[in-house]
Image 1 (cartoon, rainbow, N blue to C red):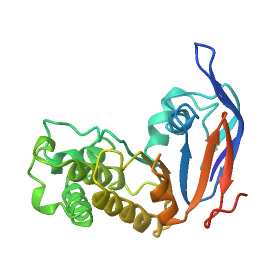
Image 2: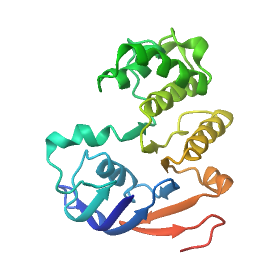
Image 3: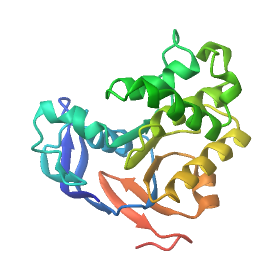
Length: 225
């Protein structure tokens, strides 16, 4: 469970981004997070990744108190997360296979397991035939699928996708979203930060609208909670 309780966050320039955010996301939910530029979407994600700390209130994720968590525990916490970034963040000097395997190597996965896990994920995202290619040889949609495979290969409890369809064409956008829905059907929590209202409408999932640092919620079908 993810729980924001009266969370506030401001930056050094004095701008308040979150103003008493209250929000609960239960295990296994699929949630869209939308909002205008500056509404707090990026800040919310950075808090969940523990790249930033809350100023006040409390933020807990699956038993981890992110407000009080010491720095040395952050890497262990992040192993529970799979993150997909809009700009892919692939290593240009590594092949597709090596990029996906990297997520396993950093946590000390035995070598015998790495190849089988990587192959499984690349088959899932339909990129097995391009495992020896480098990111620069792939289309934007293919790079996003590599990023998704890397995020999922550790079987994380929570997947956070930041504008996962922002740099790809509409057909590939749907393919990426369908993969995230498939992952959610495996009882994984999925949070998709997006500005694409058409995708939100198409999939009919719970939607959190950030405005003035607070959240309004919409249930599947568009009814406000």
